[in-house]
Image (tube, rainbow, N blue to C red; front, top):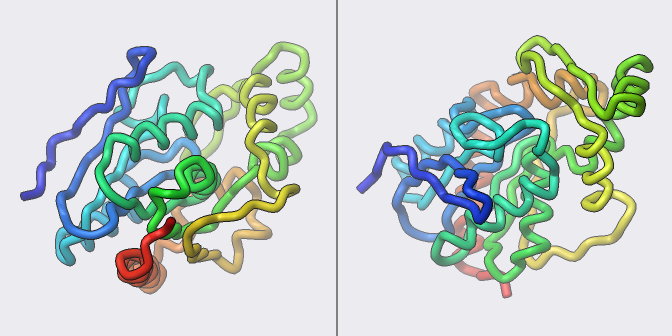
Length: 239
């Protein structure tokens, strides 16, 4: 039976993660969305529809300070989003298959490193690991960077993302979780879907726009990649 009710996972500090769960068999597919994206996005809903049609277990959720989850945006960090992802899968039974999009790809990789024994596989959609250091900071205007260094924060206004604050604390904390300059070992197979234009699209669009692999053919490839990984993960559990 599928339950459309929004559920909440209460964290030790009282904040609540909003999520939806579709009951099914095999590894639970966990959708991990991008920066300032919520669980009502196109890819999340397409995967949920596939889960219901094909009998997958599926969870989609909102990050801390996103969507219907609670949290003060100024307190949001990569580490917080990582901790919440870990807590969410710790609340589930059996193996999981994270599907991370953009920033969610970074969170998914950190999750896989923290809970290798739970991973049936990973599917990453235009993953943006280290985006704070490699894409976001260099992409800011000089006056925006100066405001962050001087005042500890600045307000960004972006089409599709709205107005939001970028804090110095977020950039500094994110350096704890950088991956691109190190070698990492994953205990699960990985499938990466990368848009050809993603490497040259400015970070403001790459992290916020819905152009990233959201056409019908791309969505079909995403569903098939997840289905294939579920089959592989069921046959060859990580361990």
